[in-house]
Length: 349
Image (cartoon, rainbow, N blue to C red):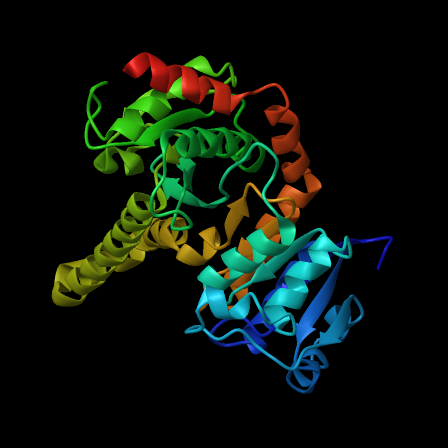
């Protein structure tokens, strides 16, 4: 596999593994004929399913693992076990056998093992979970989504830097608009660490198009391309947005069922309905990335289907091809965030 782009796969991670994992890889492989896959999992369970996809089987290698990380396992427990499919899949990236790892397994475990095994990029204090979401004018990047429940100003500034780089590569934006999630747009609003983070970003010479603060209700309006928050706030915001999206789809569906006129007009609205469903389909935004590590680790939703899993793999491939990890390292070379943070905090007293 040394002559090909190789992706490491935790074949046992997720609610419906390994079936959905294999089905998703079959979809991804058709679109990416230059890619090969290292599958880590129970060969007795993986191979029978893989045999039903002859074309996919040709580009896969199975590495047998006896043990699996369960959804209820604590990160402190799993990091000691190097025989699980998740650990071995991540370790393949560390060894240079693969360019990225994709798993639909336990999020906390994936984050802990990824951080322990791949290590944090020099100058980055904490990695973050980042995802790409839709707004009314396109898409935006949001981080952190749960890796760090509490963050200081320096952490938030680092997230802004990494989110800015990701938006350039994943969204194709030359100057992404970066904003800090806050309870108001005024300069003095919010917690002290948010205000200090704004100062660090403004004075860091990081070539970031920083537009200030954004309130949660403005996120879907497309006012920013990168939304930065601590993991606790970001996770709550993300789940609120996802829940609201599902509510809207249910309300529209229920309203159509109750209205005779709506049912008559439904064929004329079919195109609009399909477009709306596609825009709000969570499967098309599957694949949260752990950024700030010396390797690429991608988390798929545990309950996704084949299409959703293939999107997670596609996201990993896109960032690998654009050498995302090296790009972050290069942009950090001339930035001394620690010094700027010390200066700003000193000036604030």
